[in-house]
Image 1 (cartoon, rainbow, N blue to C red):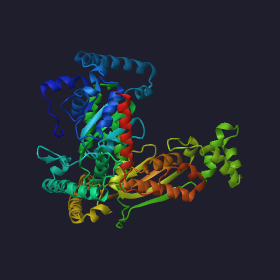
Image 2 (cartoon, one colour):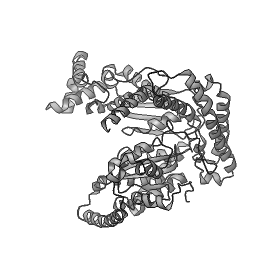
Image 3 (tube, one colour):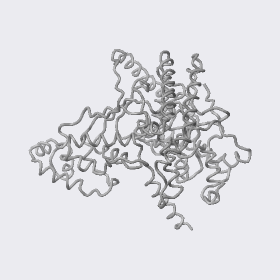
Image 4 (tube, rainbow, N blue to C red):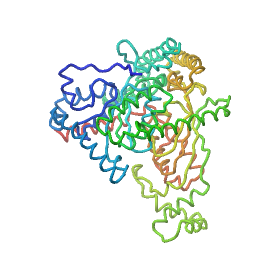
Length: 546
């Protein structure tokens, strides 16, 4: 089934300007070409905080903006575009010859591609795109900096799943989605007014910083109403081998949207790195897909016997598994590169150490960290922790982007209830908020009776979802220190803080260094200090490039 998203329309003159830089101008999935990586990276960075499509963004804010000097950085010659196409064909032939001689698949890790996937659902398709541990770096349009109240051709931008739209639930689905978006849009002005009164601007804050901080606060609160079907944009940079694995997974998705997205990505990647992504279409790839699909189905059938009827409706972070010998393993790994002892001998020796001797080793290894950007060494990768988490979907959406760990979530449902932001109650908007959420619950339950996977599109970000993290101590250090910073969203800050607290409880001597820069404080207008620092950097850039 073809995607039916509304696409940007360009004049013939605009098409001529944009043509050299994209593999197509009329589809929601496309690859960026003929630009330096620094330009692609800058473009993707701006993309995540803009309501514009990537091609419109390039045209209006880069090419047509004289301050960017785009024509001095990038060739505007269409002949270059044609020559690039010919070079790709020749390179494919060369690659095939190399593989015959050497059979080295790792070559595919050396070819990088920037690809944009526009108008995809934010909690189903977007998360499928971002679900690679390494090899692919995603950047998604933020629900924190961009309003999602806009319409195109009189319609809100949410995914209309073909299975739902042909099931008899089409009218109910659209009525519910429209009501959620109507409520979201209706609450923006009164909530903005309330936040501005609660946190009045002070003289030491610029208009830009204040407006950005209050806008982020309102977005943070109201995004709880946005359904999983909300359309977003995702930019990806990755190597050929990782794209190959991602496509294999997407081709077997139970969701039509994800399968169609895989086909669209395949079509565009074939234009620039065909040799590196051909396996998902050949016999080997299809065999791999069948293996994954059959295994998934078999486990699903088994899991039908393991169902609970009791649903917690309170947020929690539980440490359900940890290593009792964590200190022994970490300290042994600290010493190992600098001794001639086997790991077995070393662990026996560390086990016999008293606490003071162990603490001395940990002190020398971790005490010189002055800021969180000073990374802990690999010795801290030798012990693992597993957390079971129940928190609103918005928190999962943000934390799912951490890749150097193992995480899996359960199906998105309304069973665990939803979060009611205190600001919604304080400004007396809770009745409208609750009505929208109750409508989502009713519609979800009706659709779930026939299609539990597709029903996930209905669920707003304020509803809780359950997932687990399994990660080593070094990654806990990175995640908890990064996600507890003052400018972070309240929900994921609380998760990071609780993870740090639980690790400190079990392994205080290790946690002294691994969670050293976790911020356990609470903040009201989270983005304000960060925006003030941005003001300072803006002024520095002005002075630097007068």
